[in-house]
Each structure stands twice: as C-alpha cells, then as structure tokens.
Image 1 (cartoon, rainbow, N blue to C red):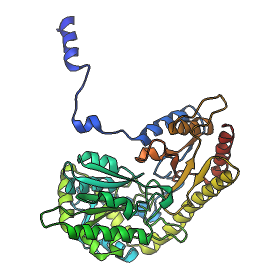
Image 2: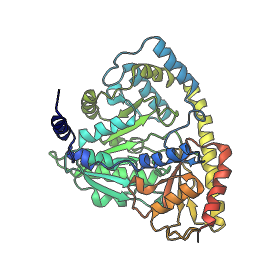
Image 3: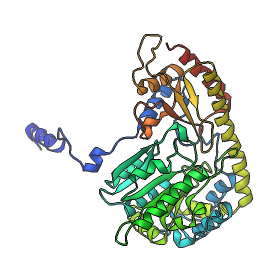
Image 4: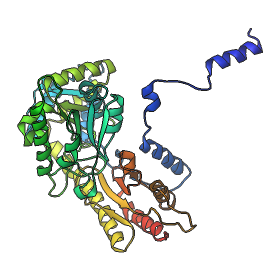
Length: 436
C-alpha cells in the first residue's frame, strides 16, 4: 500500500500546475456564439423568458424536416443500411445530387466531381487543407462564418476584407483586389451567413473576372487562386432576390471553384448530416483522401434516404414553398417592426430580408446610459443589456470577425414562434426607451 507521501507525489506527477498543448490548441479562438449560448441556457434554466435569435439552426417542432425525407431515413434503417458508406459518398447519392443540381440550378457535374461528407464543415476543412500551406494568403470577408478559424487551422495568412452596410455586407471586387496577389483561397458565401444577404449578378461577375485574370497572370509553377463558394442557403431566397453562382456566370470558373452545399439549411436538416462539395476532380480526390483519415462520412442510411428524396422533385418543391413562406413571414415581420421602432426615433436599423434564415439588424446604443446610470461603454455592454433587460439574444457581428465596435447583429428566425414576435418587439422598445 502506498504511503501518504507517495500518494502526494503521484498527484503532483499527474496534475501539473501548467499544462502545455499544441500551438493550434493553445491559440484556437473559442466560439463567441457558444459562449453566448451558455449564458442563454443558464437564464432559461433560471426561469427567465428569453427570445433566442442566436442559433443558426431550427426548432424541429416549428420547422420539421420533410416528411418524405423522414420516411426514407426510417425505411433505410429498417433495410439495415448501417455499414460504412463509400469514402467519396455512395454512388446513388452522388448521381442524385448531380441530377438535382442540373435540374434546380443548371450546374453540370459528374459523380467524380462530387464529394459527400457529414455536412459542410468537414468539406470546408478538407478544402482548406487541400489548397493552403502554412503562410499562404487566404482572403475572406468579415463578418463571415468561421473562415478565420479554418485559416488558423492551416496557419494561413489572414486577409480580411471588412464589408459594410453600403454593399449589404457583401465583399466587392474592389475590396478584394488589394489582397489578390499570391492568394490561394478566396472564401465567398452567398446567401451570406451571418447577414442573410446575397451577391448581385454584377458584383459576382466582377469578382469572377478578377479571379480569372489573376489565374491567367500566374505562371506554370505558381499555385492558382481557388474560390470556395459556400451556397448552403441558395434555395432560401425571397421576393425578387435571385441566387447567382460563379460557374453559371462564368463557365471558365469551373476549374477554380469548389461549391459547398447540403440538406442542412434548405430542408431544416442540420442534424441529419449530409453535405457535399462539387469541384475539379483532382481537388475532390485530395479532399476525399483527407476525409478518409478523419472519418467524416455521412451515415449510410441518411445517404440512402437523401438519394431517394432529392429525386422527388414535386415533394421537394412543395416543402420549399411552405418552408420559405414561413421563414420569409418571420423575417419580414421583424424587419417591419424594426422600421417602426426606427421611425419612432429609437436607435435601431435593419437591412431588408433577402435570403437564408437571418436578418441583419442594428442597435446603436453604445455610449448611452441605463436607468441605473450604467454606461454602455462597449458594444458587448449593449449585447448584455439586450439580453438582461429585454430578454433578447442576438449574435453580434464581432462574433463573426467584424470590429469590436460594430453595432450590427445577426438575428436568426430558425426557432422563432410567430406569435411571440410582437411581444419581442415590445420588449425591445421598452428596454430602449429606458436608455438616455
């Protein structure tokens, strides 16, 4: 039996006062959204009423996945599709994706140019790993979702382009041009997360022309500049807004574009975990090799189900028609409410909804004082005031790489109950009227 001294020595050997891990682990920035989510859960646990507009996800009681997809998933499990899928994705699913893309978007890709994984994230990671080496330049807009973290993973050089309200927070060719020399990745997203805004045809054409010209300029031994085009929300556009993509506008871009897509957002199926990338066969092959070691496959049964569901065009269209109408109603109702508060003279603004499940809103209360004379000195103080005083949880744009003093926020309606919108707007108005 060990003596007390030996036991103390053992504890000292196994619990050191300062742990040292990899450079990546030590320097990876935590998610602001996850941090905010923890605060919200604690408030809800304490019985507080919180209008939670932070999550880029769906309440399945409000927005269930398509019934046909659900039935196909259940049927696939009953047929015992529970073994490993093909590393690149099952051929029947890739064939269905190819047919779906051609029918819905006019894009023509064969099965060797399509790679399936468990949602969009592993595909984006594999793309960054395939293209970028340490100290390679990577261009991305801020605010945008997670590009800073993927750039950090590959130890790339961050070339941030801060987009502003004048262009609906979408980067322009003029914004990108100063960084383009020697860059290897240009990460674009439309419809954009977190803004819910989209590229215009002219803006995206100008960017594509610049990429083509830059790649033409580069010599045979130089890396090319590749566009990562995240179009996860492309089927969720509203009113007269149209979705545009690089290859449809400039067919030559097919050699330099990798698309990221999935069922996650357009079918409220974030947890079903089926996503795909489309791009040059050589890049898909390298990405497949990386993901084979990571094991980030979409589950076999879900792949079988999605393969069958995507080809049920009438059911897909019927689901999207209802789904889009419900999302659009929420976005428009909240936007109209913000415009009424703005007309009243309260410090708010918003950009008219265009796409996705997000509304871009502004709360310019920094520098004001609360009823208890507390100064809202920083934007994070405003964020905290909205949560504590109005019970409204929004994600600030600084969580997506924008400057810390940005007064803009992402408002997500994926868990929004229509009947609570008026109460939320009243709570916001009451809280803002207390400021001086």
